[in-house]
Length: 257
Ligand SMILES: Nc1ncnc2c1ncn2[C@@H]1O[C@H](COP(=O)(O)OP(=O)(O)OP(=O)(O)O)[C@@H](O)[C@H]1O
Image (cartoon, rainbow, N blue to C red; front, side, top):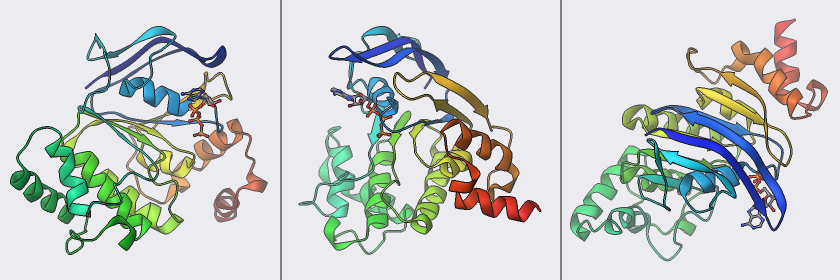
C-alpha cells in the first residue's frame, strides 16, 4: 500500500502544526519520523490513519483520497493499547471479531499470533498481570492479526526499558519481514529509527517541515550501530543533541579512537 501526503497543511485553532508536507511512502517501505516533541509527528500519523483531516492538501492511499479510518491502516500507540478487562487472547481476537469473523476462528488465530510473539501460556492473563514488554507484544499481535497493509506506529516501545525495547524491535522487524506492510514509525529513539527504517525524516520544531532525509534501505541492520555513527551524530545534531549530552555517541566515539 502506497501512502502519499500531498501538500499537507494542518492547523489547530489557527496554530500551524504542519506546513506543506509532501512525501510518498512506497509499498512495503518503513519510514521513521523523528523530531522535537510537539512538532506534529503524531498529527501526520493521525492524518494517514484518517483520524484527522488536513486543513489543506490531500492524503492518498494507492492514489485514492482517504475518507476516514480503515482497518487496512492500523494505528498502534505507546501504551494503554489493550483493554484491561479482557484477557490477552480476547484483546488480540477482538481485532478479527470487529471484522465479523466468528468468535471461535478469531480465538484460534489469536492463540497462533500470541505464540508468534512468544506469549504462549499467557493467553488467559489480563494485561495488568503481565509486564509492559509483554503487553506491547500482545499489542503487536493485535496490530498484525488483521494483516494490515499499513501500520502506523506511534512511539510503540517508548515506555519500555532499553533492553526490552531492543527485543521488541527485533520482534517487530521479524513480523514486518514476514508480512510486508508499509510502515510509518514515529519515534524519539534515533537508534530505533536507524535499526528499523529504510528512510528517516528529521523534522524541525512546529510547524513541522523536513530538515533532512536519510536513506538506509541498502544497509543490513543490526543493533551494532557503529556503521551508522556519522548519520546518528548528524541526526542528533539536527535535533539539538550534541555528543557530550549523549552517552551512546560518547561510547561510539571512544570505540572509534
Ligand atoms: N486534536 C488536537 N487539537 C488541538 N491541538 C492539537 C491536537 N492534536 C495535536 N495538537 C497540537 O499539535 C501540536 C503537535 O502535536 P503532535 O502530537 O502531532 O506532536 P508530536 O510531534 O507527535 O509530539 P510528541 O513527540 O511530544 O508526541 C501540539 O502543539 C499539540 O498540542
